[in-house]
Length: 490
Image (cartoon, rainbow, N blue to C red; front, side, top):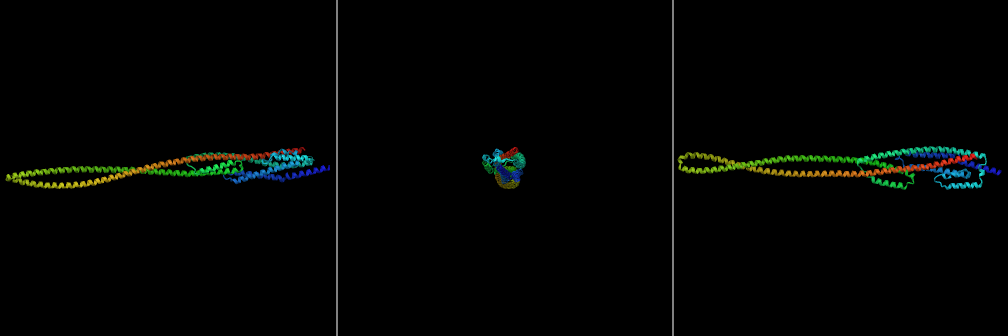
């Protein structure tokens, strides 16, 4: 009897020491601190996500996720340690062997068998008789279990708060997805604007290669989701920055298009001015040509009139010479008659002499007039030569002007060809830019969709981990309830 009493006292002291070491307020405080620390980390992660996905740095989110994972591992290890100690001290009837497989995802199932073996060995040693020997032991055990249950209830409340925060996080994520859809609609509108502006992005090829490399890296490192979240957010921010840079390049290209259109309009004005100058030159040339032709026709008419008058004067001179010869023959006849009839015709001879003198004077006047006419004829010939030279000069000038007009027409045709070629080149270049920009926008849209899908996958994995931890915690609560009922029954 004394030995039994000593064994009972020893077992009672051992159990009280164990519960004092593991279910004391310090352990409850440690559990509350870990829960608060986990809540704080979750709040920080949610705050980082809420602020702006573009401003979140990769290192901050990785640190927060690692800290959360560390707290989760500490809680799981502490839970594993507590259940192991309970199994070792309480024996196989405590029911701890039923919950050992759900301690943590990283712990193997063999721990349950080890704990069961430990329980079996304790059963073989016969400690069952010394575990629950008296009512005082039961009361102390129930009080310690109640203390632990109160701390567990506090932890449960903190987990409920964490679940509410998680639901809020899911709501925020859905809201972010809606904002992402709105941004996709805005991207579609931006695409239409880009099509209207007819531009291209010269850096799209390098960006495409970089994005393809990043996509390959994402596919290769998809298992490590905790470290991939921030990198995907960084890629999203870079894609948005690239879109902004594309919009700036669009504005620059639009300004270039306006400048080209202004140049084309200026060229069109120059062509119209050249056409007007050409028309004016043609009109002036036609007027001058008509005036010169009228002057030439007038001079030719004057020349024909002068030649006709000269012919008339020559004919009149020949008539006068014929008359003079007739007069001389008549004078010879008269002289012969005078010899015969000298006395009778002396008066007539004198009269005829006077008439001859008068006729001589008239002939001299006619000769002088003939000399004057010849002089005028020579002057007219010189004038004709001058007019001919002037006409030749005018013809040469007309030919030179025709040559200039042909050169101007050729230059005008060359300018029109250059204008058409420039317009065609600009249209081809703008079409190529439009095609490249459409391809880039499609790739960026697909990349954004992939990033959002990967974010959802990471969130699903985190949700799965939290659900697993929550299920383990609930099983631990059920175990404690079962243990309390067993203790009460005993």
